[in-house]
Amino acid sequence: MKNIKIATGIALLALSFTSCKDEKQEKAQKTIDSYVTYVDSVKNVKADDLKENWQAVEAEYDKRSAEANLALADIKDNAAQTEKINASKAKYEDFKSEMATLLAPPAPSPKQQLRNALFGEGKIGDDMSFAWVNAQNIHSVYQQFVHTVENNKDKYSREDWDEIKVLYEALDSRKNTVEKEGLTSEDNRKIAGLKIKFAPMYTVNRMGAKAEENKEAKK
Image (cartoon, rainbow, N blue to C red; front, side, top):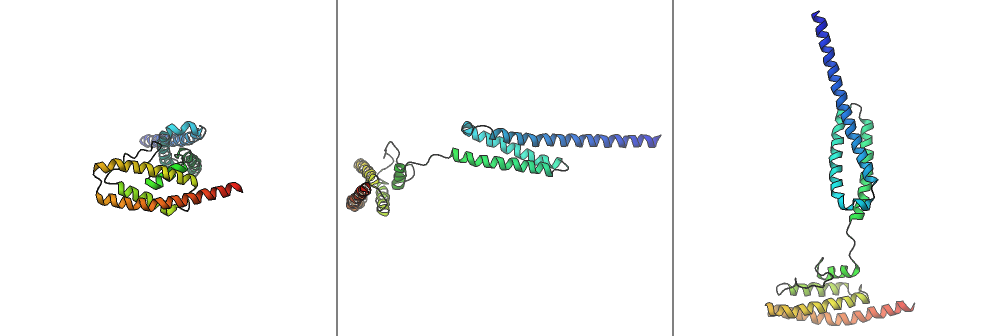
């Protein structure tokens, strides 16, 4: 009788263990299926509609992906589930690449690219403000401007030279203001030398670009 009770207890314990194991596998399967469903649902939404909430989408994806990979450990024969996770991961990575292109800021216009090269990234925008130029940095600003023009003079179009002239005159106007703010005589002398260098370079190359433009127009 005692042996029967022991055997019954062992059987019940084994059944309980099997039941818990089955529940664990079932929960793991649901976690993986939920991950796959999430990826498919994201891919089915128009990319334009996801732009504003993309950070939240990525955070949720990372969470579900981590949970799905942990769930694999609770599935005995998990080869098929591993393949399912990898397939969804590949889908998401492809979609993520598409979103990266969509979310990338638009390339600056040729005019803005020229301004960035002459003064530094984003220093001069559409407002043409030179308020950031002061008595302490104006010499280095002139220096970068003139040296950049000199290094690229053979590449500029007539329109580029016209823009360069507008920017140069705006910088000169700012110089008239900062001279009253403590511009040293040494910096003033160096700036004068840069201006002497720039003037003929502008005149000759702008004329050359204009002549080339006329030549192209006649073809």
